Length: 198
Length: 198
DNA sequence: CTATTATTCGACCGTTCGTTCGAATAATCG
DNA sequence: CGATTATTCGAACGAACGGTCGAATAATAG
Image (cartoon, rainbow over all chains, first blue to last red; front, top):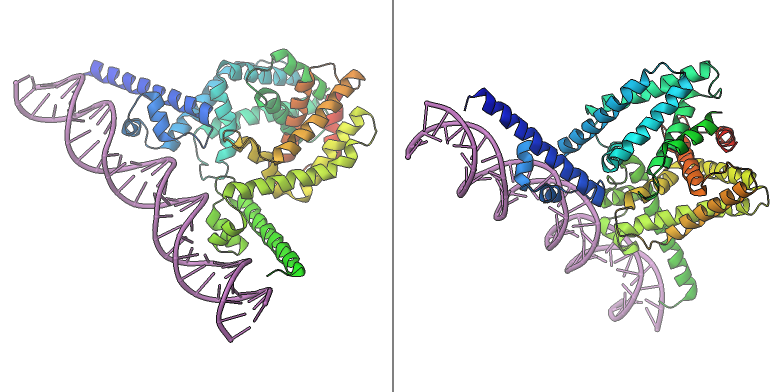
């Protein structure tokens, strides 16, 4: 078993199976919630035996981390262009939140997981997880936009961290509260943010 | 054991011990988070044997429900006067959120539990819990204020449910995100809400 | 083909945790 | 004082669950 082509195919199949497992994990999470997502059921939904999951991932935590990393990476890729658009801070800021909302609506289960899991993981040791780098990067960009916006008098003259908390909370409320049915439109987000930012 | 005075004292002592247990539960929750709060540790922190907890409560869930009921009741009592103050919808609405923030700051562990637990309990069967009546009552009052405010042109002409989600999210972000240290002031809340509501 | 390696999987293991048991102690009553 | 009832508690139970084992099967190599 030394053939290069074979090895390539194998690793592709391995990646494909990992993806199937992650899809199953996401489906179970959506159905049962964070704590209700058991390895046995993820295996069942994914169509693998339980032990097979451990052939592809070393632990349940690794499955969740892989999911979070994939989510933050996808989100970040979507945002990268918007972040360096060269527009005014306020317009860039609003564009980013709109883009996030748009991305969220392309895969709600994934992004609900993405924005819910970190709170649940707060009380665990999980600090060095790879996905956190991307989360921090996003917060940093938003924070800088707010600081610029304040300096340029586009935003209210308030503590930047306060504005970030307000915006983050407002966004989270609009996008994630309530049933799936009444999902938010980009226009509504823009209107709300416009009001709040003056 | 039929003496009336004795029976009264007994039931008072029973209530006092229940309160001690609830305090312990809250302390453990604050320290370890929702899922990290184990019965063994609640017993240890409360100063009772584990089995004694089950002499005063029938289950862990009942302990949490009692805590939630107490929290929502306290919050509701604080708000009752404000809700019927007879002021304009906008002023009443802002007063209520300010009052909530003020109340939250009198007992952060309790109210963090209050506002965090419902989300974690979403995926459990727990629907008929007594405390939910008070939660719904609060939401209903806020919703009515928003509808009045819209009708009287004090609020933006938007879907009321959207405004509630935005306000709720913003409030939650301001009050509960970040470390305990940078707790929000009532003035900051008023300023934010004033901006958003126009 | 045989030998070797990769993959799959249900049964099983060890731990954790909510809950209960049964005995021991304290309080109350007549 | 017994006798009865209320209270306390650690030990033990049993279910749930993440993770592992070892055997079975499939894929590949020579």
